[in-house]
Amino acid sequence: MISDEKLFDVAVDYYIKKKTQKEIALEYQVSHVQISKYLKLAEQRGIISISINPPHVTKEDLQWYQIMFKELFGLENLVLSPGTDNTEKSHALLVNFAAKYILETYENNVLNIGLGLGRTMHDLCTFHNEKALKTKWTYYPVCTTIHNKSSQYFDYEQLLHMISKNWGGEYSSKFNNMLYFSDSMDANFKQQICNYLGKLDILITGIGSAFTLHPATREMFFSKEEQRDVLTANLVGDMINFFFDIDGNIYIPHNIKNQLTLDQFRATPLRIAVASGFHKVESIIGALRANLVHTLITDTQTAKHVIDYLK
Image (cartoon, rainbow, N blue to C red; front, side):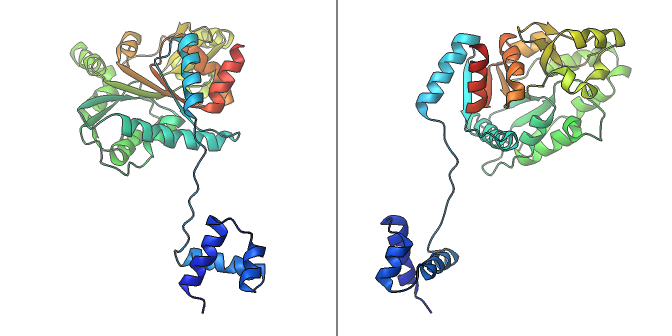
């Protein structure tokens, strides 16, 4: 049986001294196939520990993009994650990066946090916080509650349960009940909803794609006349049901109620948007031009696509 000491020496020769397996095999008078087996055995015994580090964003690249987005859109804060050419992988990387950034940047102070809906928000809420839980954070849904249990991306009950479990903190059952039964409530309760949403410290949301790409998820907000107008209005995206074109002109459907108002949206001190992918380029541009975003978390590929689009 080969000793740990010999496996250690082989590992040092290969990983530290950068010798080839053939060179090491000649030294030990064995075949290079045997050296390969030694390296695998060393890993099994814990002598070798292999870590895979994702690509990182250089300080120079980050600073350049921050300057460009500041000049083009007046964006206060741009946060970049590494990206890949694979849309699904980029999305997964971005969601994990964004969740870590938010959890590490904002301390466990008393904070009222508004949450949007959609796939990005759902995936953010599934991220498990491995550090100290945010026990003092309270979460609030900020746009019209959609009773759509068939879609995990538009089920606020599930979203609130997941984020309070995975990030720490709690959500207000009283507030949720007021939203659910708002149609039957008097003006006093509706004013309470408005008061809650006017006291947010942070708003976290994705940026929706063009209405025409996913009309079924939003068509309940538009009358039949509006739907016809929307299809010709060239709307490129939305943030919590505030729709906009690529120039930043905002369109608010008449059927939206009991949600954050546009004034409250813009008055929220920290408005964090998480979005990536080539299909979101126009959506991101429109949201930034509409002055809806304080902090944009995206990846390097998407940031480059935005700059290239405007050239």
